[in-house]
Amino acid sequence: MERVVVITGVSSGIGNATARVLMSDGYCVFGSVRKAADADRLSADWGAAFVPLIFDVTRQDEVRSAAEKARSLLGGGKVVGLVNNAGIAVAGPLIELPAEELRRQLEVNLVGVLAVTQAFMPLLREAGTRGGRRPRIINISSMSGKLALPFLGPYTAAKHGLEGLSDSLRRELILEGVDVIKIDPGNVATPIYEKADALDMSAYFQSPYFEAMNRTRAMIVFQGRRGSPPERVGRLVLKVLEARNPRPAYMIGSGFPVWMMRHVLPARTTDRLISSRLGLRRLRAAGQFRGGQV
Image 1 (tube, rainbow, N blue to C red):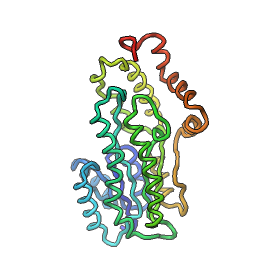
Image 2 (tube, rainbow, N blue to C red):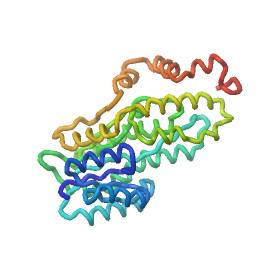
Image 3 (cartoon, rainbow, N blue to C red):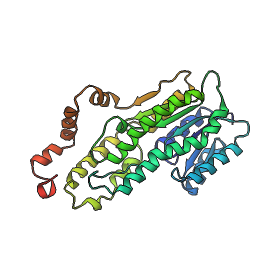
């Protein structure tokens, strides 16, 4: 257990794939799950290279207990990396979204990242520099942290916040000798798209946005299911952990169009491109917004 990496959210998706990639390269993974059943399943599948930590990132007492458990199990190992991956996606038109839904999104995807980072920071400090490599905090953000899509406002707000939090934290931790890197994946084929397809949108059935939301969801699910395999993100995490001088940020997947829309095109042009791609302008022109209003 010489090289240990803590990864949140390993039950499926990017976290699961990243854990498998790192373990195949000789790392020991301390991975978070919320259910004991998932901990048992993964332990049976992965063996001694995996140590489950059961906690919810929104429950600070559970996070602190998990960090204490990790310390007790390290033996002579060192926590050389923390991958903040756990997250959810809340959808809905912002003008109608219950405020508690936005709070839930931010608690998991933003506040939870800070809570986990604070709890495991002492272990990262103690790891010290190995072969010229500083301990690393890797925050899994999203292209949504660069480019805002309609009806994903809560998720976009959390990921925009994570971008800023990561930059501020990296500059603060220069004092500590700990590096912070953010990874912005594009479309990655994970179970989150199956959850999106099964999302109950009945709360918005009477909304004038309902048809537009359906079209947007269909496009996102279609593209997501055809996205990159999550192992590709895992291999990038491995590269970041092993690099002597990693870049502060990486995009993986369909990054160039997002970069163009964010940094080159005027905002109004981007508005038109997104609304055209999602069919929003056609819906408006055809009067298909319920009640004829927006």
